[in-house]
Amino acid sequence: MELKINKLLLLIALPFFLTGCPKSKSVHKISEQKTEKKQVLVTPPFNPDSAYTYTADQVAFGPRVMNSEAHKACGDYLVKQLNRFGARVYEQRADLTAFDNTIYKARNIIGSFNPDMTQRVMLCAHWDSRQFADQERDKELMRKPIDGANDGASGVGVLLEIARQIGLHNLPFGVDIIFFDAEDQGQPRFLPASNNSADTWCLGSQYWAKHPHKENYWAQYGILLDMVGAKNAVFPMEGFSMENAPDLVNKIWNLASNMGYSQYFLFERSAPVTDDHYYVTKGSGIPCIDIIHYHQSNIHGFGDFWHTHDDTMDIIYKPTLYAVGSVLLEHLYQQPF
Image (cartoon, rainbow, N blue to C red; front, side, top):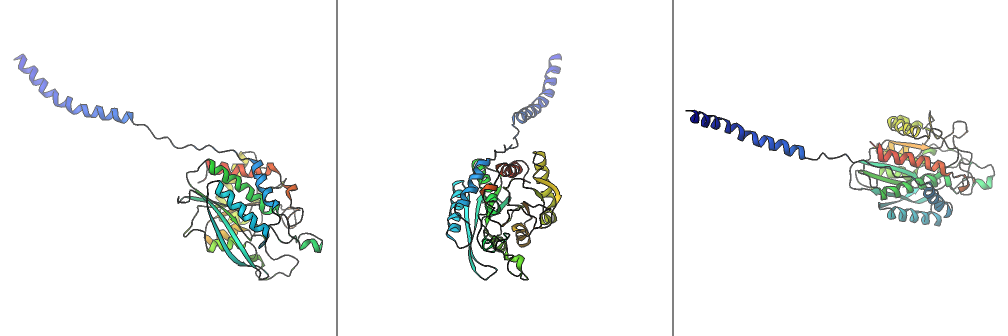
């Protein structure tokens, strides 16, 4: 009788034991699974010496005014650099009509990193230089072109160094670096103003906004650099930027403050500036902000060297280039969205 009872207990316990085994193995397998770690990006260092050299390289060609040999040579240089950094390069050529009906052979130059990714950011600057020094007092000097070291070349120099770093340290999203042409060829002040004089500026970005380099192009936002290389430069929160993308402006300016660059990035709103970012936002719908040297105390808002023959490499200051470039790199690698 005792033997029969023990056999019966064994038969009763066996199904529970068998059904319990798979569960214990399943738990064991789950515990062995490795949790995927979120990719942590390290912000690469911004090299101000490189940005300075890229700025000087452009100025060395001479004034990059439309339809000139210097303009063509500098454009070829920009294409070569973007190719060297591993970007897919698009050249957008167009005949654009100037304020005096001159036809400009314009050339927007775009370097795309991770061109097939849908999540994108655009960074931009203009690469032409002004054909008139119309802020000079001397009438003869007014009609001569300027070097445009700060006004044009500095923003491109910073973006070339950023392109170099992206080429060395890939990002998990797309970045388009756009060098707009024919930004600084607007109607000079020594001629009577016309009804559409504002629209004689930023011709390259106006064209791009209507005819993007890629069909159905879209970016989450854009950041424009303009005149970002002078000593004692200040970048207030530009008016159109605050109207169209205040959250992005606040994010960049707070980051700059946290990094110790509040002497450059001022927490004060400036008047709206008609610049490439205005036409990008207006024409394409992509919210674009402007990091631009603007001083409220000046009559025209810009530095004393603006649109004069003092806009040379002598005013380019590496710490300013470093501040702007470092903030942008930190933004891209740590808090882009």
